[in-house]
Length: 394
Image (cartoon, rainbow, N blue to C red; front, top):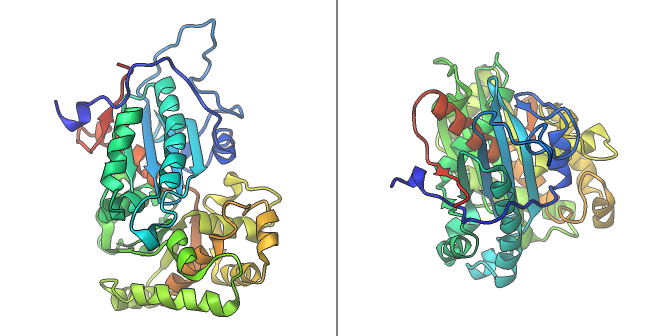
């Protein structure tokens, strides 16, 4: 039996759990490249009710991303050249809380994460995906007990999570955001600001552009995984009372990490001579977009795919640095869960912008989960194989 044929779910009655508000919203909206059911809320199997037998409507795919800060699940069915979202889940679990100081995942953080993964397991059982890829990133990569925690998840929940390397993480982020890259640009610098690490990928299209979204990572000329994320920066510098001096110290710290980027000066020259833009995928950039738009509540349809000029970003970060912690907590696009993390994220973003200044950045409310789904579907359409697990109920 190959890895792709192993079952990850034990037999059990189907169950479900309430999705995060943002995933509820995305299911009722159609964004560029990501299709969702026409009706709001979680419809699950479209058109199915308790009095009607379920009708097969093609394969279902699932992607789970367990990061340092968040646990995210997306379940979808292929639709034309993209996919239709059936269900989703997002929860801030802070799995990497305290990791910088101790080198280990704490008991409390693991317990929170197990609770979230249990809800994800129930959704997987409900939708019975044909193929799935369940990944864990920096917290499990770097923690001394990360592998043991993955074993515990398998034993308690029957979920087989794969700890991916940093290169794979960068490639999946590129794949997930590929259709937001300007078709007329000569290149792009994609960045994904995570909880424990941040991925950068320089895409160079001067020799041609891949025709399939699932192959966009083939255009990566250089990449780097920074050992800094919103959680690790917050634990080092603090994220509650952030003065402008503290913010600048954060930026300087990240800037030192960027000096190791291979091709750093060549990328600066390409930006000077050619059409290159930034594309950011993370809670940091989507929060900045919400603030820039003056949204009363977060709206993915307005944020995903938004272009922001360098001046827009300057003004929004400046306003955010001046915003007291209590106002960040109360802001509908930030909230208590992110109030201490948003400025560390902005510091990472600012360091990237100063190193490679471009006139505009595109905001992506998508990332690893979408990249997993696209890569799985693309592989099946073209008869190739990518790491995945077959999912069954017994």
